[in-house]
Image 1: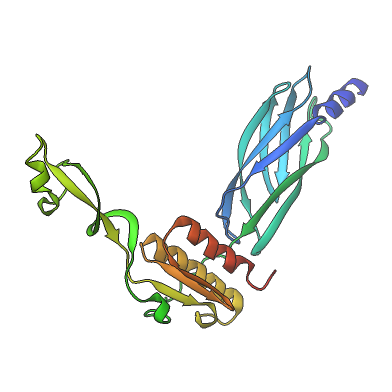
Image 2: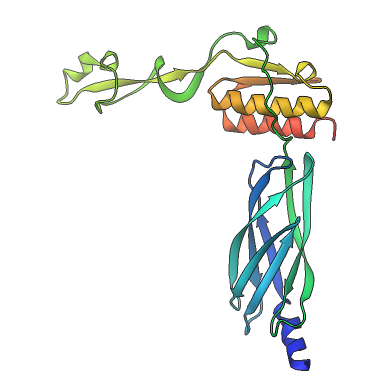
Length: 249
């Protein structure tokens, strides 16, 4: 019993944890996070480790001496806003599965949880004059301005063939154009559907994701803050962060 107690105590000592969080986390939705455990013991491995984080559990059969292992956990965060992961519980039944020993290891991870997206009806048109007009997207299309000249691959329409330039080369050359984005949409948080602020925020998240993924620029008016319409991924995350933190700073 004494030997097993010492081995069990040593098995969960001299360990450290690190967690990697995705940049999109939504309230009440399962999110996969990456969890790494590192064994700082120089001479002995750690066996049968169980890590509990925010109600989710992951296991490691063996973490070699001075080694590390990584696993994924399906974590569900509750509530929007800033979240801090300060600690996780590590336990193990090693060596004889008679006692389960546990310890708490510190974490230093922070994230912003976005409101849960809820389908709702988007506004029928631009909210104000700031959202009128069309913009060019960063993707390829057949209606925008010429971006570059490329080799003909057989899938491009003949109207894109650059005949004058092709006459100077052995192969056909085609014009690559930018795609035209849809009419920009300006969202006013105060005018979104919903009986409460949380419902309007959830509606806003759904519209932002749905519109930008459909190549439609979206802007946002949140009180005194105004975000001009754009379609970049960074802009989408910026809008989602504003919706997550609105009224909670």
